[in-house]
Image (cartoon, rainbow, N blue to C red; front, side, top):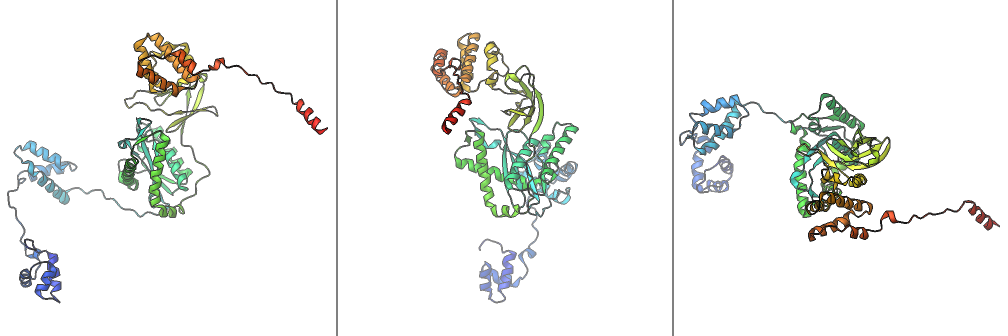
Amino acid sequence: MSGRHVTDHQMRLFMKFRHNDGVAVAAARAGFSTATGYRLALEPELPSQGAEPRGRRRPDPLANIFDAEIVPMLKASPGLRAVAIFEEMQRRHPDLSPGVRRTMERRIRAWRALHGEDQEVIFRQTHEPGKMGLSDFTDMADLGVMVAGGVLEHRLYHFRLVWSGFEHAHVILGGESYVALAQGLQNALWALGGSPLDHRSDSLSAAFRNLDTDARTDLTRRYDALCEHYGMTASRNNRGVAHENGSIESAHGHLKRTMRDALLMRGSASFDDLADYRSFVDEVIAAKNRRNAARIDAERACLQALPDRRTSDYEETIVTVTSTSGFTLRKVFYTVPSRLIGHRLRVRLYDDRLDLLLGGTPLMTLTRGRASANGKHGHVVDYRHVIRSLRRKPMALVGLVYRDALFPREAYRRMFERLIERISERAACRMMVELLALAHERACEAELADILDADLAAGRLPDMAALRTRFAPDPATLPEIVVTLAPLSGYDILLGGVAA
């Protein structure tokens, strides 16, 4: 074509077609004019062979500084970024044009290719079915998931089989820990129906921080025991070397993009409760696994059989219930019924809950709390545990450390603020405690909250007499019904009469 240089490839085509065609036909098939064909027929060498090396058309702007200043910097600090070198050169030479930045970056890149240090080599591996399973955690904060009206700060535990691409994800509310790993890994293996020969994870790296040598040894021992229970060889990649876990690190990005698309298709990132969100995650993962169903089924045949039961996926500790009708664990205060004051409880600590046992007897399950990011203690408070004592000491509500956590719903907290503004502290505390007691004794927490919202909107205070009447009857006024059981001998008489 006019205005374009003939390439080596066109020249080779032209010479090939010349064996059977004339110059005009061969030139047309090669993509240039007949005149060019006749000219090239007399000069059979390739265009690149006859071209003279192109020289500089303008002075080199880096001639005085590259070898004298930039190269010594590259030798002294091999990891120095090109943009940092450019900014330093601008500081040293104010007359240096900003337009030479790209020239400097290309020159530095070329120098490093010829004289730079050797870089780390990644060796691609051949994977076998049933051989390797990988675990890791990925932060999902950028998805903006809302649960029950609040932002859900969470991670996903992510498990993946290298060969088939089977995936499993589990919502983790806390940080990377052994408990989160044990729970997520066992859920994945039981959903899969087998276990691979090897399991690799870097999930314990974050859990190792701020631990002494004995604690780190114990954490490693528990992780090794977990893998041994499922017949897997435990391993961890080197800290900070993510590509050693590359088969799952790259999958994190795919999973996040899939989750983001699914949320957009759903039309909302808000969920009623945590169980609803976990079901959504399960649906997304199930759809991904269906695309690899054939390979997953093929790899299942190569997996090891699961043991008869799961192993523990919790940490166990002993706490003492203090006179505050609660205990503190991991910088979080939890309330329990006051009848347990002075008792030592066994606590099984999961990622999202605490199971309390008195000896071997299960007592209750509490939602697990988290300490604040600023280091302040957290509070998990159930007003039902302390309401009887609070009725005897209502003024304790004024300076109560966990007062905001005591109110079961936002309407109760706002009403207490309104009471403090409108009436005396003593009267406000008494009325607020009576409202909480009413919610507990009459089992009307949600309905009472709606009434308090209406009172707040209307600018009026609660009418305790009307509320007690509305949520009647008072359990204390219910009649006691005594049922007298007939003696068993009467049945013998009846049966004897029938027999006669």
